[in-house]
Image (cartoon, rainbow, N blue to C red; front, side, top):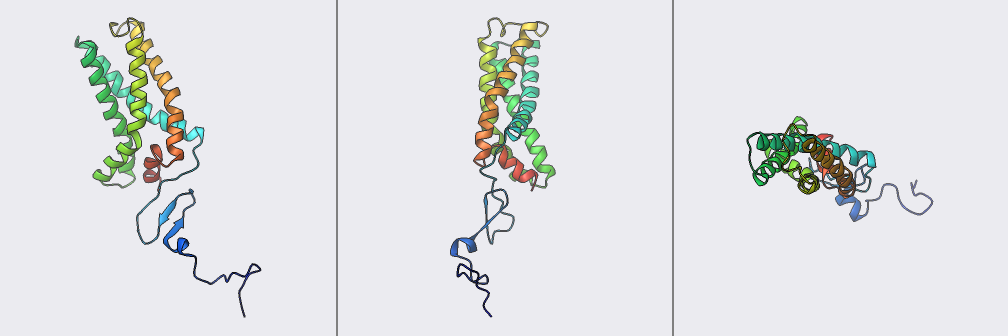
Length: 190
């Protein structure tokens, strides 16, 4: 007895060549058959909620690092350039660290976790830092303000708000292409 369906295809026939070399996962990506542990990055779907969550994650690390750098530089009486350099370096360090901790908890070894953190956060942190530092630099008097001045905090926190608004669509675009925080999400959530 034949198990042919109405369109003439045999249910038990060999799948076409494409189907034997790739399996579709439920996230819309591909997973190569025969490569255990190989995960593809989700592509195609990136909600605004995902982008906001990714941006807030990135902003948290950036804010901690940048505020710490600005406080250190200002408290020690450093000039504008060394203060901003330290703040930016600490923003990247803290931003990467949050993702690194997350994917390490998911079981990745240190080398793989570092690669994921770099892939997940570099563009997001760079955009955020560019925008935030530009706002601080171009706000009249902000670079010369002291920690006790409202202008110092207004420029810094206002810069974070604007950076968040600009970085969120960037993260959405990247997640939709399986890049940025989609990389970390794939590893942290299986």
